[in-house]
Image (cartoon, rainbow, N blue to C red; front, side, top):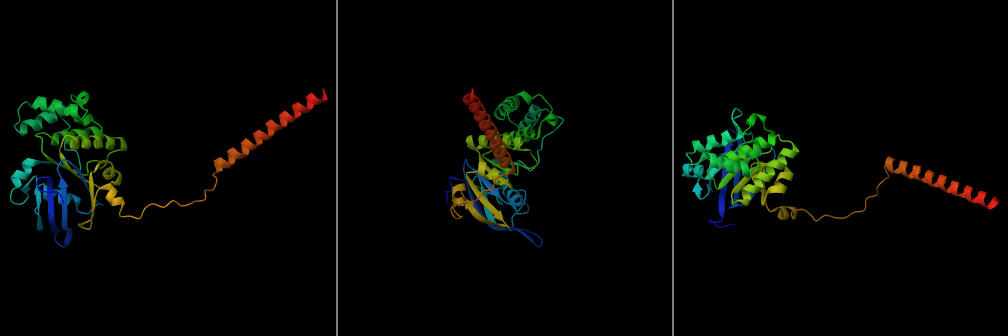
Length: 272
């Protein structure tokens, strides 16, 4: 277990129910500072509920959690100052340009030089050329990158990304993955929820699997792979495909025709 100084997020025995539905049944996990932590689970596993508790949007029924050293129940304002939350759908203003979206958020946060902040984020997320266009014209991947860029205004040390690639095509997903990797490279702690196995495998330093309200596995990718028996190499008899049969037969006939032609030419030379 990491020390308090190294821990950006600590969750201990978190429970949450909605009437008779027990969504979280005692969740425990630690997220190290500057890392990407993937919370993996199917729909309804409780991923979004846990993120809402950690971002102070929802109160837990039991257990406790700290984010950036602040208790989510007793120091909610300090937690909110420390985090940024990006939900499942991009929250950009389509009437505004990409740059205008960023400037607006910077002004709402009462930051100095909002234009310079916007230009820097456009550069970091490879959106400079599109900065003057309305965000309604952006592709899905571009809008998602803009959404993440907006969430970074004010340099929050902890970022929650709740299923950030839901509904995106493969190319757009790869664009978002690149943006997430940039976050961690800059020292930001990222807690990522996803139901895509390849996404967790590509991005995460550690992966926790949330199933029916509890963490059933938690570790690095190598540690999780070690939970299963090692791969065995077995002989599998492979039947030829129709293409292989066709090429083999056609090639064989071509060889016979060529051989027959050579034989006839040799015989003619001998007779002459």
